[in-house]
Image 1: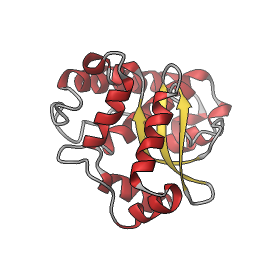
Image 2 (image 1 turned 120 degrees about the horizontal axis):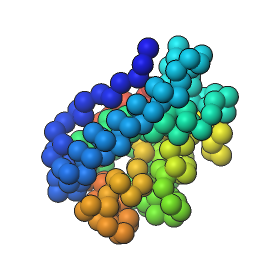
Image 3 (image 1 turned 45 degrees about the vertical axis):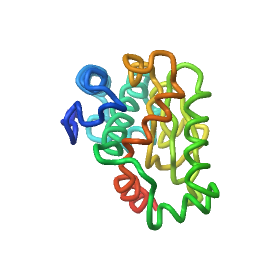
Image 4 (image 1 turned 90 degrees about the vertical axis):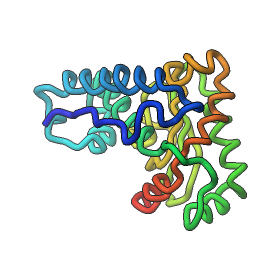
Length: 202
């Protein structure tokens, strides 16, 4: 069963002014589509054709770089679109908020750690909030299109929120000012969606 690109769950202009329409159209319609197309080519004729994306990533060391790069690219972007949204921002509530306070001391401290992880990731990659193998929240980052589900990740866990720090995610609007993008993105985080992922990951 070939993987497919799902439609954005909101309009491409819905995250304005924080993420511009043109970036969203290129990022989703071209970059993400290319990961899906190339993943399908990379798994053709292999046992990965019959596996879920998550199962492929958990055993990604068994496959070539085409599966690692494009499988990661597909998974990471699917998650990214799902945890952003219009009329979002603010702060987490409920159990997620309690877990953030327990792990980091405060939401502001979590935000700072996510921004630092994204700002200091050399080249391209991602900043992540994960539920670690110990069941606790942690912040980590990965290069390229790797993610914490992969058996090759330095820090393993289930990602519940991720920030794309590839230049194509922000360059049209923010140019080389990655920290400005890392600040602005918190205006469009859908914390209810992150909380749902947290409940599933626990």
